[in-house]
Length: 428
Ligand code: PMP
Image (cartoon, rainbow, N blue to C red):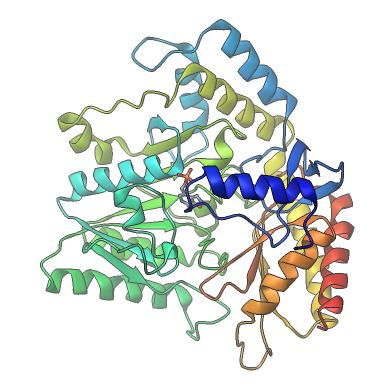
């Protein structure tokens, strides 16, 4: 009802031919046909501001990526069992963004595969099987990763070796030292594993806790958690699928905000600006036990075209100074968003790091009762103002603002104005 003929026909065809596990955004689905930078256009020619997609990390259809991919596609595309410079040059450049201890790179096509391998490596290195994740974590589609992804809901059983910790939520957790509180959460789960005869293998966490509601503060809170993990013989896997690649502004990787050194870094989404490429970076001694025993070959992973795309992304981040851009524009956006709190009581908290911001809606500020219905209605209203975003968090009441890094100061008015008008229209 209320859908135009094109939308109705595509929606119907979709449910006819696609598997039913797919979920579509919006009551009035969006049919996109073109993108450029931070903007998207639908089939009617209407222009949208993308405040959601970090896959087009350096901007939709960035010419540097198109050129690099086209050039390499015309020359050769094979796999990693032959010599090729691109994967080596790129690996040197990528490893240079990581702490010095991290000195080996491997490539896949999806974040799921990177996390799947990370879990296998953690198990091989530690001799244990137990994996700790946060309560709303999402780490992927494979059996190992979906078994460590409570975000998938009660229909998806967690592995018997998975343990959950409450997220380090600075807004909702009442603790004088959030880092100590979070480390104690982890220790408790390690102890519970031990009591059930499960040896701890590692702690797998998105370093900005995106699906737990975007939790960047306070800086440094991960340090005690990482210490606990190491003291108990496990490894820390930083899932950088969302916060990595200059997004958080003050550092290239999300964990940089906490000044910790992971044992493994996994990445994906933003790495190839849309070309499927993902990676696992690790300390060589962590990788060694796995590599000595088990060969790894990923048919498409690390192929010359994927590496050309990834190389172009990294170059653009440097040339266009996108990390600094994310820091500066993100801070300005955060400040403008916070001004909305004077006018709208329903905004409980706004927090962020660079161009990754959580905008939390509550029934009242005193009780902090989450307002999920408002968040969902707001997403729909924003769509009417042609601003695309989505919700996150255990209560589904946090708007996840995560635009391509091509987002500019000049776009702030569109976003903030749309939020202001939408909240007013919704009676808030
Ligand atoms: N980890 C995190 C934190 C993610 O957000 C996602 C994707 N949403 C994944 C892993 C899985 O990545 P992919 O969809 O590329 O397999």
